[in-house]
Image 1 (cartoon, rainbow, N blue to C red):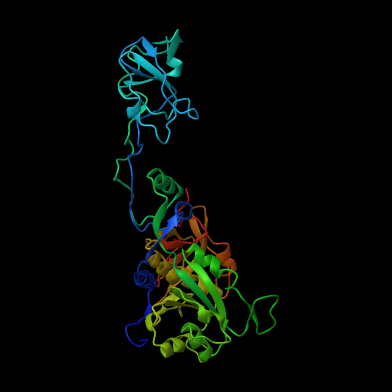
Image 2 (cartoon, rainbow, N blue to C red; image 1 turned 90 degrees about the vertical axis):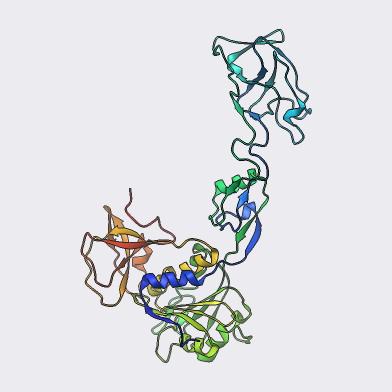
Length: 425
């Protein structure tokens, strides 16, 4: 229940750890290789056959056996592969060279049995069906195994190629294909629903006095995607307790389409404060939610919530002010989605602050900054309702409650759309 076990007014680092720990990895799904890029591998990838699976030539030239001169012999190859290329049905055991014999081969071609090595094209001379070394060749060329890529050189059949838990990159996708896989088991991207609140919010045009423009609808789906989730559906609820209760409990109503949504995480915007006009906390109590985080000792973003609903979904309650909400996204939503994806938690990196900060007893400051001349320069326009400072930022400094001096190192997080935090080289 909401009254028991909640971490109230927790410090910033603890909030991230709690959110990450709450998100147990979701069941995996099987996807084609083309759809696996950027996803977290759920099961290790093993080589289904040796890589390469046959001994092949690393050069254009001649496969030879014994000492020169070599008698050139032809190789039986299908008409559509007349130049020594490997075919689906070819096998190095089908062709064998006797001592003193040689056969032409192209790069990647199947090396015949008994071949000592490959004599490169530019190091051989053919006359009357006989092959000899030319003046460019070494006296012992080719040495045993020279210019031959042995079977299993990169990986033996059954060996581990990619461990579970990695976020798949293009090279790993290619390696999985070489290993013989057509599909991969990956952790499912968390499914997210969005619930916007606020009767004063308009979605289009210029607001009048007492109205504000919607800053969440245009960017939250993309923000969630950057954090590894997928938004299934979004909706809006009135500033009314009954309407909010119906929305977060997914009970069918005529007014609210989000009621038909399922998923793993519900992100709400606004209404997380303690006034009579804020309904998220009271709605959580009404539905019997388990509160995990009830406020974070940070500015901006103090009234951030994390709860587990009775049906197992998580609810992330974002403050209504846009900068505060985005700080809550990187503090709680990002770690929660990383936990659900089975990904690692991004760790802060130190940056040197260009400015001093006075103490703010009991709270960390989250300060957008830009890197200039190797130092983190705090952005302007960084009140909780402002966005200009964050829009031009490289990252977010976490200034401790005791403050810091100019030239001190403080922890910082990168923004999902910016380069990693820390000094630039």
